[in-house]
Length: 364
Ligand code: IPM
Ligand code: MG
Image 1: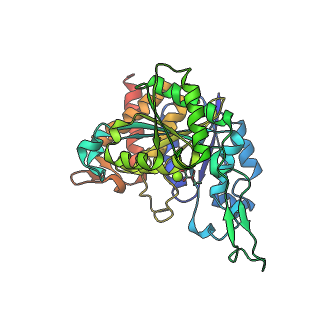
Image 2: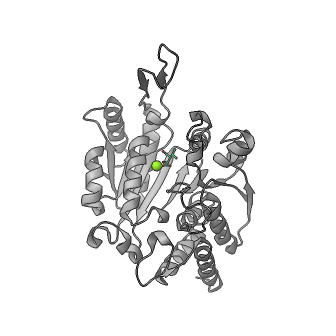
Image 3: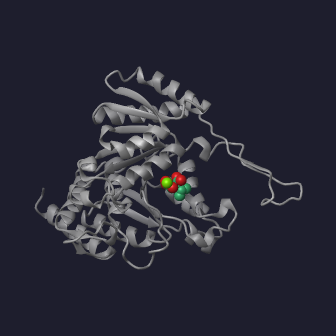
């Protein structure tokens, strides 16, 4: 029996996680689900976005299925109480240092991208983002209080970009091993022409590369990588980068595929315990309307089966069910194009569940 913490969160989180659970239930696996509040909805009830009970549940589960957190209405709270702190706290406390963000262009959705079809048809890249270090967590950080004691009048604010050798080594190993399973090419992205942290990153990655002579390593500055991603995205295969650059490049890569509503992600620690969440956010502007695309969350559940629950076959079935539903022309609003059938969140979840149940019955 495996246990899963289900943290749906805010905004569209509830709607999309519901559909992922529906799809998982078709597989009749021996899974125990425990739901808990996180983000703004936890703040509303417990006064904190990551209550101790939620963190404890997540830490003792085999995996966390996460929806999304955040809403503009919490923007005025002190930073430690904002919904985003919940996901940062889960990453840090669970040691989820390795973030996998695949950007795959489904053949049926080529037309949904803002780039020319030939640039993105067949696109399949993997961004590996370091997730628990860098300027996100470096100390010291803060605003110097102005002499009058007011933050808005502060003369200066600062964050610290910092990486330790073991932090770079472990993410480099993860990246080289991922590249070994794919095309054996790895691009490490940094800003070594300007930043000490980046030069150090580059040196450590080069040292680790000695253990992976079968993988061709190259290095790219982050500004160039941002440009190459829209110029010629298919020349990449696996990219590895730090927390901040990875945050930015993974949104860019996601959008190449047409919709960020399609892309799953996995964040793993050293024990393969993982948190699985769609790459998109809580989208408060469309929350409660039942129109969000649940596919990124459904595909995140598939990654969970593969990485943390040792059910790779079940994961493949979910991916196949999603493909067949797209092939049948079903589209939520974000990926809709002429000639397709527009469906809502629930109808999309139902369709994937039905396709999956067909695949399970036919014993594929
Ligand atoms: C992401 C998000 C988060 C991040 C926010 C919500 C803290 O943008 O997962 O990419 O910056 O890591
Ligand atoms: Mg982001």
